[in-house]
Amino acid sequence: MDDDTFRAAYPQFSDMIAVPPETVAYWLAAGTARLAPSRWGNLLDEGLALFVAHKVALGLLAGKGGLGGGVVSSKSVGGVSVAYNTEMGTEENGGAYNLTTYGREFLRLARMVGIG
Image 1 (cartoon, rainbow, N blue to C red):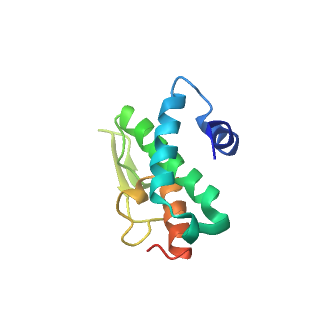
Image 2: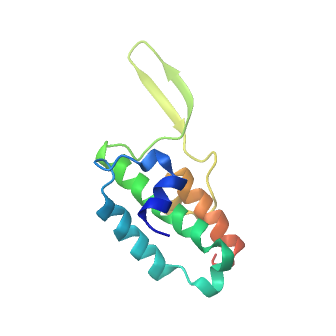
């Protein structure tokens, strides 16, 4: 897995300004150090790409000031109010991996290969 392969799989991260190559390289190296090829087998590239996508997405969300949210469960117009269901679509004991769809997919895959 390299930068080009990652961006081809996840074109939503193709903006080299918003997501510099150094950021992708950092998380690719971090993921490579954390994911054992002997455990992940032929799912290693998919797991590594999801790990990187999760970390990059977290960085982008944090940069925009928004890590909260979920499915809108109620809203009002006068006085502007909104409430979110933060439990819907989450993985049990997923922690920060529940903050992105990539993290949730990574966690499901990790559990399949026996990590969790």
